[in-house]
Image (cartoon, rainbow, N blue to C red):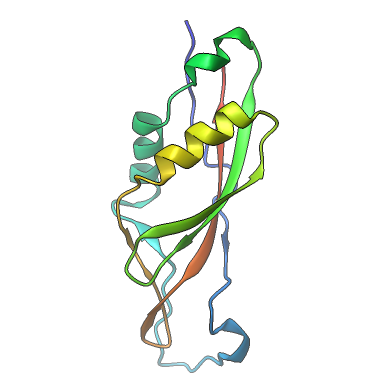
Length: 127
């Protein structure tokens, strides 16, 4: 029986704030990275419950890993989903289509304001 394992391997937040180049930090300013509501475990559960092993991929008996990047906007919405690495477009399409329906995140805060942040995520499919 096929089983999908979601693995947040990269989960690296590339701190690409729009204001990062001109920002300077003061001791009293709170900085906060974006968070999926409920934390990393909730993100992993959301991925596992929403991203499926593509039906067209039943012919393949291989493991696939899709790496994507996307923006988490000032309002917590997800946009600009880009596939960074995927050997098979069937898996990449599944990930992108489902990430487009992702619920709002808690946005990042820099210098007391909500800011857009680029987020990287790796999802592994194991047959």
